[in-house]
Length: 277
Image 1 (cartoon, one colour):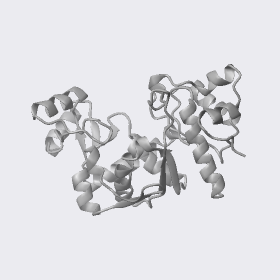
Image 2 (image 1 turned 180 degrees about the vertical axis):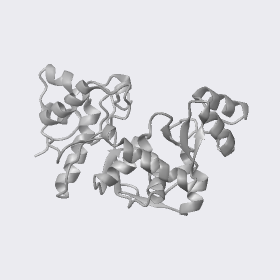
Image 3 (image 1 turned 90 degrees about the vertical axis):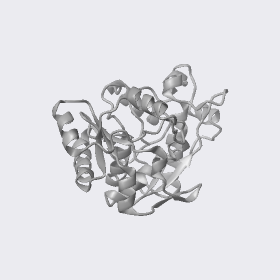
């Protein structure tokens, strides 16, 4: 279970945590907790404390000390340097506005599986000399993965999902994803690949909204010579309007439900499950 301490846990988090806990319990494995706190602008200590309190209240003990991504920055930086040495990442100086305008100007605005605009490769062919000049000028930039070049290096790849079976990796569906930014040596994609490997995870359980991100993760695993785990992308908990519960739409928090007298058993019933034994 890998929440970000940028807000309080909600019912969707409860489902995801219980799913991971039960998967570990039934397979006689370990239920691991990771705090994904690389977003220093939004993450807060009080939200991290609340994560521990909510999991304890729900009766979901985790194995060992939680791993905090903020303590892993040197590992991420080393992996990024390895990818740079392989020649599969490049600096991108584009803003979101520039990307959108370029896509509109070209008469096509390709979108990925989650309806997000796919990066059209504006900076992919900038020369090394030009890139170095702009970096020396202290321009903001992000490191992007050159998916086409990386796939030419790895060849065809596949990964295993417990619901979908063997899946042919198609990382190009998401364009060239950002792996790090000028002042932050990692992004979600790079961090979770390294964290899962470092923690010895052999079954990743997470929401089906991250299914397509796994295509990119499989490519990074191949480049970094990491053995891929199995995956289980579970269903998402939705509200009465069919929208998935998320922090951005102010889903009901576990803290609020606890404050108004709800019990863990009530939470499990709300998400259609019995309380774990």
